[in-house]
Length: 200
Image 1 (tube, helix red, strand yellow):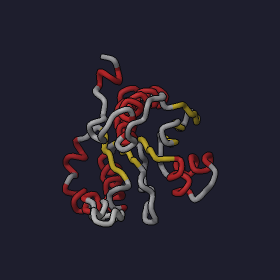
Image 2 (tube, rainbow, N blue to C red):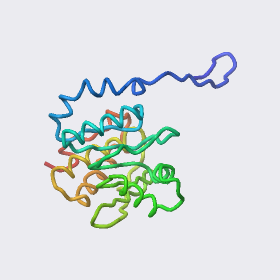
Image 3 (cartoon, rainbow, N blue to C red):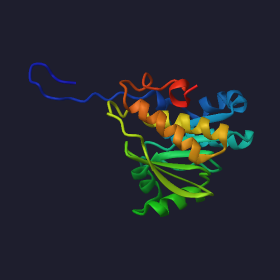
Image 4 (cartoon, one colour):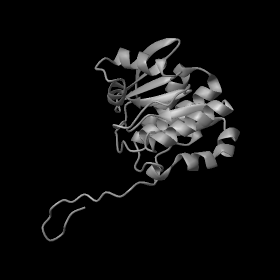
């Protein structure tokens, strides 16, 4: 915000609805979680909400997709397996309290991340599972807006991984979707259609 008479900048901070997602609210969604093929959560909600979501996924044997962002002082990996974990390289290093990417990758796998994706801005994706670790570039586009592009990557990669069982193929699909999102305005509005990503 800009104060009109002086031109000085001010920042207004409002409490996010995400911080209101409590363990009770997650428990209230237990029936929906039990009916889901994939359950998505992220560090934007309370740590207690993330932990409760993970507990219910373990109880119901559901695949948990964790967008581990933003990493803050209270962030922690939930116990149990995550089908897919996505976060930036910087956030992976902060969570694992290291400066070595390879250590962070092993640390995250040791804490239950079955399939792992590390995002390096709009440049590349490093992905890892029991078949090894690889880095691929994100298709180059004229970047319009970063907001929403990683959420797009998370969604498309998780759905493709569920359908194919192949992390490399899922990353190829997710990277293409992310590039399409990067080239558009808006967060939710930039999400590409299936026909744009898969060509059918």
